[in-house]
Length: 272
Image (tube, rainbow, N blue to C red; front, side, top):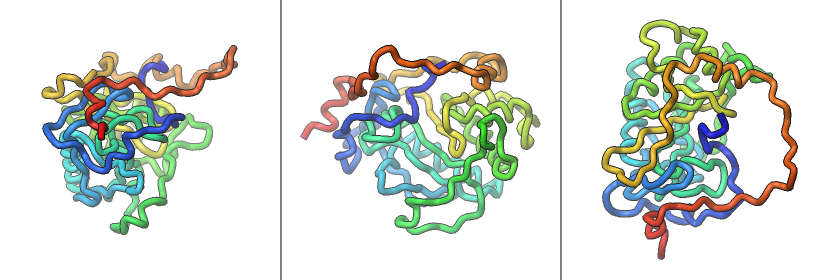
């Protein structure tokens, strides 16, 4: 289970990648693994678009492979056609990908994006007002059930739209959200259910979902994550998240985190 995602953890090392102000020139390439990689020829997501707003702009993490940018723009348009309120887009990647100084171990190849579940009516905010916006949890205290006051058919519609996009490899959601959808909550049991396969349970992700796109065909150095197991995931692998697991005390003190070892092709993207 723990190998599913090198995910939303705080890195304990400095990252020179955050010093790059702009994407590198040249063709777009996702290079390496999602937690050991970089991005060449990336693109910036517009801070405002049909159906979405970028938040936490000061982080400078609204860059991605052009496929990721196109995916988010298309998702915003599709959500608007369903009369959903605009969604917030959080972290994507740094301008040239690579490790972030804090917040994520993944998001390094320009193929990841965090989309917040808050679909309440919201004004178009000035950039300075987007650093601290309401981001309610969709899960009740205790972490076993969704909060029906926040998670309803709107969130299901947005997840369905995202998961049905052919370029999406997987979407990480809180285990309680995955289980609720497995049980057909908020209209999720209606119609075609093949999209549920792409929803993967993971720690946190109670206020947002994390989309990961597949390696682009023309990114020969992109390393794909192991495929999602067959089936809809509404099985014992999901039950595991709700079983008691004894705490494990390390036998020796934990070593400081090391910076990830990136492919050689990444080094020239940050060389002066």
